[in-house]
Length: 392
Image (cartoon, rainbow, N blue to C red):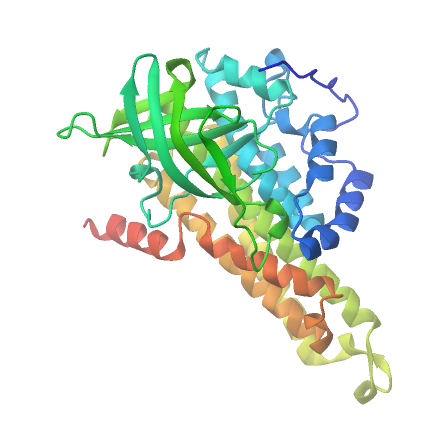
């Protein structure tokens, strides 16, 4: 691949803070992206230009050196103004956090990928597979060992950033030894022969992510682009293991950002929408509307505090032991469920006008629904936590 010129580091870009003018520009485009089911290409270009795609990469390697809490704070703000943009770019950013962790640990094996990120290239996630409810524990995609690497065959779904990715992080199953199946994690260059995008993305919400299907047919992946290989049932190495601590808190921040925006929109409407029963004064004067407003705020305060607490503990390197996965699953479920509940309340406050396509609440209502479908799903969370607590 030809190197892209890395844009200069923006000294004015505060850690964890995105410029307000940039965010408002994203907000203006969000309804159009949604209405036209169009990818957020302009937003991505602007985020790349300010260095956001390399924000988590250490300064020593050409990034901005943002910490986990700073990265999460920025994702929450981005989602407040442009939910689909935040969700789509998250599928790139969550690779960069584990990269930063490996660099900090003195592991140079993935420096090539950090170089690609700093050069402006985009990484997407190729983990979704139809019928695979085990996530990266297993795969319907096959990896056949050949000289110099693997041949990959499979059908990936929910490939966010489909129009823009340069590298697709995938996992596949190597059954060359039937008695010892192995899970292979690798990065597929978009330019590889046998890579095909199938445009399937026409959904209820987060439409601008362009999460189309990706079909891989006899795609060769070189050994140097393989990130991890381990026996099925074993734990992955530190790079793959770091994905969830970076991906899940950011994901929850996105949905809580949506909920915060919905609450703020609804409150503003309650302050300005007059009703006859109050003598043509704002509906916010009604006790039940005030009750709804309080319920939304209470829920947001609790979920946000829980999320920030877990994020800070992860950033400090606290040893959560065997409760790490439980903590991540719990914050994901509590956060996304709270986000849905708050957006539902926001529509109650907003009244019947909330269901009009011209009302921002209608789009936020659709966008927030996607939270329950991101792995781990609600049933997977309960199954894991229940088995963990009961020793099954």
